[in-house]
Image 1: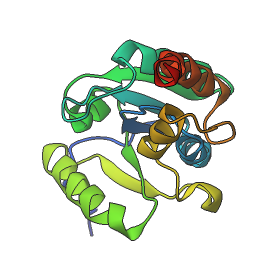
Image 2: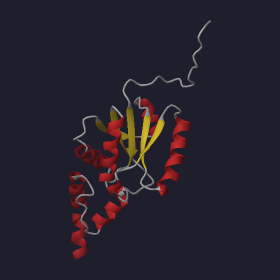
Image 3: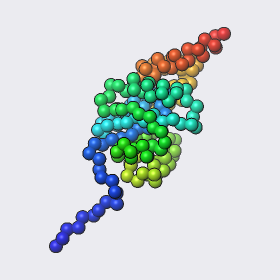
Image 4: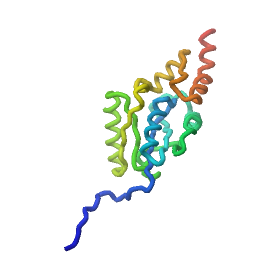
Length: 182
């Protein structure tokens, strides 16, 4: 009697190292993002934080500034690399032997958009899973847009963002504060 094993429809073999890609514009990186990265490093052997250019958003920081700030902010993590993502995240993940794309969900309102994106990524690269993670409860309310708005209007964002982000925001909005006083 011969044994027949069910073959997986997947043509991709399971990677030896479990690599997750966490894409985003990170404009700027917040402590909510860092919270997700802390959770992701417990699940994956390596996490690639992919800095994406997004033509639909007016970025405060340039692509290169976001890359540098993220590298400085995440240097404490041994198995986290920061990289630029040009093109589709699903293709980037496949090219870098990732098994998953990591996405953050703060509230139910995030789910609809994230679910649609996950389905499109699955359509593009069937073997890449999408993993939804929530930040620590203390960061659920936090968004990059909120941080930018507070910083732009002279509010304090210390404790909401990593120190390199805080310095970059203060530098970026220094001229704005001077011109408001005039």
